[in-house]
Image (cartoon, rainbow, N blue to C red; front, side, top):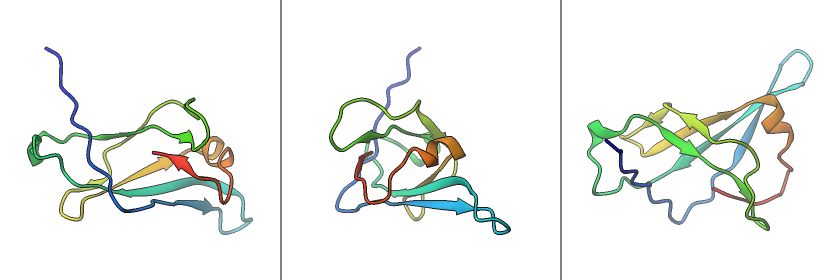
Amino acid sequence: MATKLYPPQIEGSLPAFYLNYDPTNSVVLGADITVPFIMNAAVGVTEVKSFVLRLKTASSNSYLFPPIYSENFNLANNTVTFGLSKTEAESLNEGQFYKV
């Protein structure tokens, strides 16, 4: 049986990436992005298992990398945090806008 996906609604906010560095040598280890959302009214709290992040640059329609999955969400605060690998983090540019 197919599962119908109901996307969360993201309004009025601009999430940002935060790079994670190794404290001993300042090498980039990865990046995190915390995305606020509003629960879709068609979804019950117990139905949420994970979230998926797809990224595009603001000027293109091609995806930067495969989907990023996260089970690190807080339904009380309506936020979900995604972790990017070192390779993914290094492909992001400071000051660049991305489509989430």
